[in-house]
Length: 127
Length: 184
Image 1 (tube, each protein chain N blue to C red):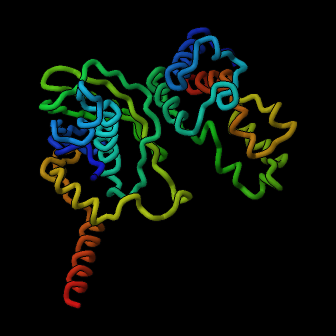
Image 2 (cartoon, chains in turn cyan, blue):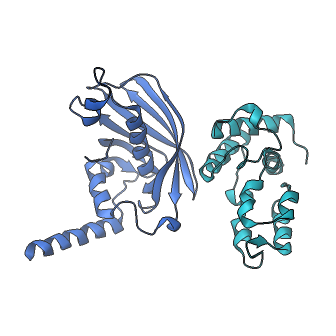
Image 3 (cartoon, rainbow over the protein chains, first blue to last red):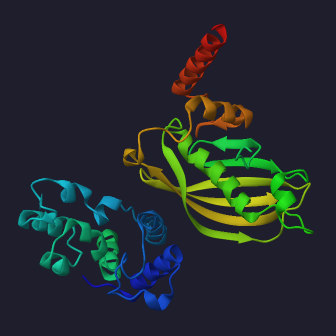
């Protein structure tokens, strides 16, 4: 999924406004939670700014599929099972889950989302 | 002292916008303490007043049942000080409202002059934070009456909004309890 300079720039702007970080901190590989310090309330703000910027509708469950991560057939001993990973990939084709797959702990899921993932998600919604 | 930093609602349209006023008095406690020799109304209480205005605005359509808390001050720009004798108008406009929270944009004016511009985010806490409401419904209802909310509140079609039945029932129960206590 190709992400244009324009999309990246708008996403970068939204993250700078919502999180109070500098432009140069918002790199494609930066994680929203770990690197940029996003908290749950920030996601509401980010979603709102992206909706306004791109004229799209975003559901927070798209970014954080709670139903998969709490479903007993997809989670065992705090880790996402193989069927769970498959379901996540189906639901989130724009996300790079390769790092998460190596140690798929549910508690780490929130940390995996990167700026690139967010850009690819926006592109998928615009299309 | 009561932690109310708004005096009255002058406008209220469900899930859209609300305006309140607050009269700043020389005799108020915050003016007394802040700052010695140059008394003025603290900006933090202007934010709180807008949070109260906006918080009630985004909670009303849920019958004031949701646990609404101020979660984030995204932006707060103050252009001038507020001094004793000023009446500030706090206008909150809903920008976005979702099951998890809401965002409002706030403008504070003194007469025609813009005193502050704010953007606030609210979170709607779920029952993992406890099932009890943040305020007793009969206490909140009394406060809303004093603020004259129901004198001006309308829905998006212009129809008048009345106090929610569950709050009226709580008020009746509380009154009954008081009568029984007095009778003993």
